[in-house]
Image (cartoon, rainbow, N blue to C red):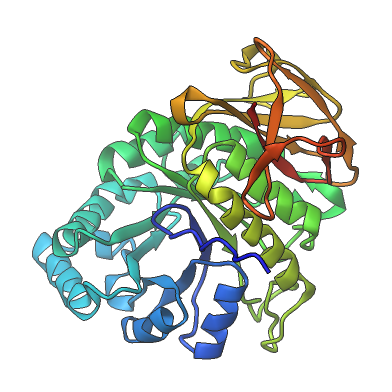
Length: 381
């Protein structure tokens, strides 16, 4: 058997199990086998177990949760809390970052900036982790008139090293929330403007009126995230919460693997195989054809392609080493496979980066087929 390429490091492309993760060796080993490189949020005293599983993690501690009240603390108290936690974790090989807050309003950004700076001073090598609302949050929730103002205020005030947000878009009945791609557009543009990477948090369970996980849905979320040039993807959640109608997370409420575990592992392994090539690419443009979602652009903006047709597509355009043209072509249809055709501007053949081996080969006679939700990374020969 051919030796498999190494996993991506989270510093290169983060694959995070979003949520609390117990530090049990068997649980962490299964997380690694499922293709994650970041365990979720763990206690500082569980980092040894995380390292033994070949993972890194984000440390969570109640004392450093930057709640609304905590953002009003004086700087000396914030510095003391950050120093106390970093003293227990700093320098550990499994440490990736420190959890501060999820979905804050703009009204507390100044306080969050003080928390983030405290951790950056105490442990410059670790990420102070914060995550933003999606664009379907209300102005009251965001504390801002528009989503664009909310994101820009966060970046200008907090100055995070990574821009993370969540957007749950797959709905019952096979529907897609109509603001999904508009959210990706806003986040991509902001990340490029501030020269930082971005992460997208997507669904790996069903709850409320969200769809039950499927291979097509998991592929769609991963490949559309790649098409927009992300450097991380997080899944909500790996463990099914024991409330409401949560179900079909990779691990259920009885601690057993569900069919979602294998589906998610397949997608995560594709990310690892594509990663060595994908990480060399610089995002140039993203367009949709023939339908153009709200806030997005069409084929007329393409910088690399003369034509592309065959289905409902989103295409991410990239520059590789020596400015070699690359595209990520994604089938947006959840129900149907498609056969697409495309031509480069200026002509040229096509080579496909295999999501199963990571190798790049000339395209064959069946390499223009995409399963529902599937993406394909191609470069000009």
